[in-house]
Figure 1 (spheres, rainbow, N blue to C red):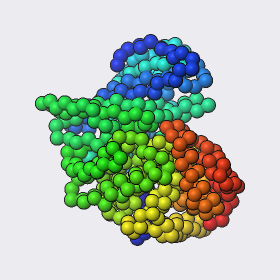
Figure 2: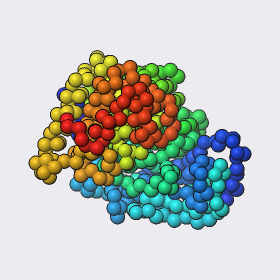
Figure 3: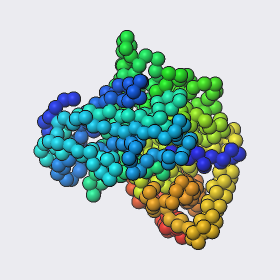
Figure 4: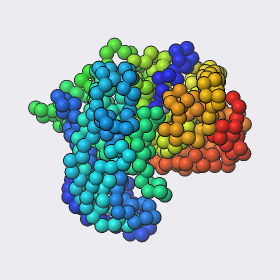
Length: 482
Ligand SMILES: [Zn+2]
């Protein structure tokens, strides 16, 4: 995500009970697969869907259940962890209102229940134990009620934002499936890569910007049905609108399309997106997806990243939208292709996205941002935060090793996860030199693409080329004075 408050105007500111199938030992397992069919009901502002998910057990453990995140339930009235505060008028543009995600049935299992700390988890008990290397398929029928909210999931005055619009498997760790509740601070999402086959049925007149590549389209009297595919992605998002205009440019076989409404002239944002795709591809490794949708849409933050789709707040000025477009493009490397735990280590993807953005603007001065300007703004903002916190609380916790729900609020979160992290990577680069620093990031990308990387994986890549472990530890543990 890109936080609005970071941008300051001047420089910166199917089927039932499918049998278990097993691979032969040593054979590589197919990718997990989501086959999603969803119909948008414009009048009711609902999405009715089925999500058929095929899972391959790559763990060393026998599994008796699968757990899915129901992110849409964070929008319900009695949610403990709401996506926005009730007084957030930028989000609730027509007063506070609610949505929710209800599961109607799950086929291919023994039983199921909606549980978790905040009705945020769908737990599906399997008919029989799933041993390592075995596969199973379940089909979830669900309804997503959309709130009227300028947010990653919601109906806005211009569009329908469909981030996190289907039940998605919780990422698996050695402790089991990671069952994180929704948090309004940061991006509380952790998921593994899978292949997607998504069919959206929309009323006539709607255009969909999606993470996928269109492979089939059928227009009928009552609507248009379009099928999209996407491989090796950790999520799939869409934004719908009746008013979208588009601008498209190709880079290396990838169609980059900007979707926007109204009088906006987003050529500069398109140029910055295509040039940053090119720059990051040459610096870190190739962009993996056949398309990239850059969508201007109302949000309560500056931007939001999904694989092959970025949302940019349509209220941003051109200057801030250009900055945000590059930041969200950088997330295609740091979040989408190389995943990390955005809940426990938010600095890992946000810091790298911010630092990659700096590197882009440093080498593309025509956009008007400079390395010294970006760093100066981060230092100023961080020191102001440090001073304010010391005055109010008599101390400030400057550790970066906290989960997103352990920050006091957005102000602290932004200064630690974005600004301090940016300054940490600047220190690492200064210590290592440009060549080793960017080589380490390219190595990190190559070895962790389509995986979930731990902070140690990133630090090890730097450390292979230069001893910066102590320096990074100093930042992470709050010992470095800025
Ligand atoms: Zn971000």
